[in-house]
Image 1 (cartoon, rainbow, N blue to C red):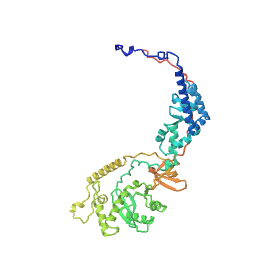
Image 2: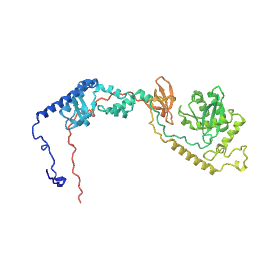
Image 3: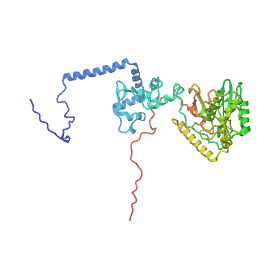
Image 4: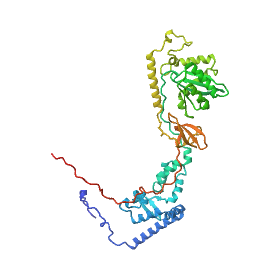
Length: 469
């Protein structure tokens, strides 16, 4: 039986055990040596058994023995890395940052405890295995970190993901870009938008003044609208409201032929067609079509009937969000309708009301842009000669390869030519730069210059000029 007495002693006075105090006091017994030998045999048998059972590891081992860079790396791992990176063979400098984690186990170069350094000749094969599920770069990198490694593997995975044709073809649509609004017209008839809609076997053309919101609807019949029909309707509009400076339409066949271009040149109109599938570019006409189509459905498909004209008059006389009706914007006063009204109602619209309405319109435009821009992303500009992928408007697949031939002056709209020779106008949102398949990155040294020993600067030293009072 012992009686122990505990005494407190500051940590600085404690005796620290060193290597000699932990050294065995006697020679190992035969039992100890026998246990070590058994353990060593067990480890070797386990490693050999694993390698013999796994043909993949055997293939890596054989390719490692024929890889000149990895053979040099094995020698350096065994002999030890030099003190300075500059003294290391240029082919091995990519391994400098992980030199403390490299080891050789059963003929394989290991990075850490679980990652095998893959020989150059097998890297393409391993990349294909990592990309079998067509996952993105980060997911593939997480998978690779479980078992394989080589210098610049992240670059190879990034190039593989970008260059995969299947991944690129089925990639999601690009985010919308921030809204670019047209300049607000300063007078009626300055800027006009036109668009077509179809209802019960007939086609209708809607023309709208962007300043006032004044709409006009033309029945183009059942035979299908051609350029001549569109030209006649626009000519009737111009006879009543004047020739516009700018006409915005979609890219339909009625508006993109040489005949319509000549029509616009003859009248002195600047034609501004929007890109196919990008309806927001002709949003003003789209909104007018929505309203006019509602009238056609609810009132009468006969846009020349008295019933429809009465509904259209009521629409034109109804104040919009800025407080003024299309009639007030166009004529400077409300139009008389069947509603009983005092004559003072038809007086000329007060200038202060117009100024107030203009301010409201500017405010509404700013709010609309702010709401639209949520989640938007500015895309880089393309250049003539760029090779791009084109997204199909219906299937949403990026399965067309094309070259940029022309850029519209207002930007974001590009003329591209496909491999088959077809020409398309497309908005930037439906074009993305083509990334060709790229091979595996080689073990390229960081610098091609010869390794140099660190040296002192040879710049001349000059004593400072001191102030002499």
